[in-house]
Image (cartoon, rainbow, N blue to C red; front, top):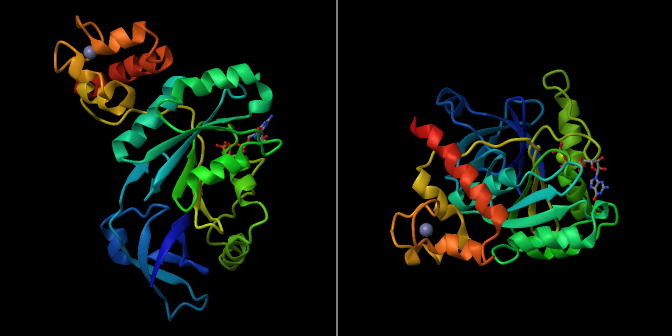
Length: 301
Ligand SMILES: Nc1nc2c(ncn2[C@@H]2O[C@H](COP(=O)(O)OP(=O)(O)OP(=O)(O)O)[C@@H](O)[C@H]2O)c(=O)[nH]1
Ligand SMILES: [Mg+2]
Ligand SMILES: [Zn+2]
């Protein structure tokens, strides 16, 4: 049988076959090879006839289309990069690193500005303006649910993870999108109860910090991944020159720079710096570019 891993806790996995969810373990061969199982993986599994709880054994992970290590998820179409402007304050280099990680992995980013009740409309619009010419942007007020339907339309039928710093409202948005749906949580709870003593129990969602990646299948076919937040992100190990490829707004300009290997930093006749001075490239994005370029240089030392 084939299913999707929707959650993993302490060596146990929850596998959803499109209809129901079963709990299982990795077969010895996967463990021996230290093969990781990611939430989002498509796996082949068998119901273990010898197991009184009817648990399953995962014997193969189908080749991933893509994956991220932070958050640890696989097979995404879209990553919703969630950030608030205040509470917590936005850290644009972290936001832009997450976006760069999507570009590197071939995952489409959608930008989501959360907690819009806490800022003026003007401030939200200004932040949206940093990204609106390169990516879809949605603003969400988690208190009223405003913006949720816009996001639902953008992600319909796709494998979509919500990712971003701790406390920005990812689980709140998950709950809004998932509200009123008949979920698989009840089945998961029962399975967890059956396994009590062997694994520690999970905590609720919403008001609590998310500890594990978890997928919520929605009735329109969307597979929604809620992920734990973070405060900082490392850059992947890439060459400094490769960082410029992760900025889609630079791509059309690089050919106009005097040097084909222009880093867009100190070189003369740089089309990116010219676009920056004309205000066609966001200063915030460019600053993130400089931060990221500096950071990957450490891998070379
Ligand atoms: N004012 C305001 N508060 C919000 C909004 N959305 C969420 N919150 C609150 O912000 C806090 C964090 O929300 P969560 O949804 O748990 O945040 P999270 O991104 O899932 O956090 P982690 O799981 O730690 O990564 C909770 O107290 C929420 O009630 C919003 O739109 N406006
Ligand atoms: Mg959460
Ligand atoms: Zn240049």
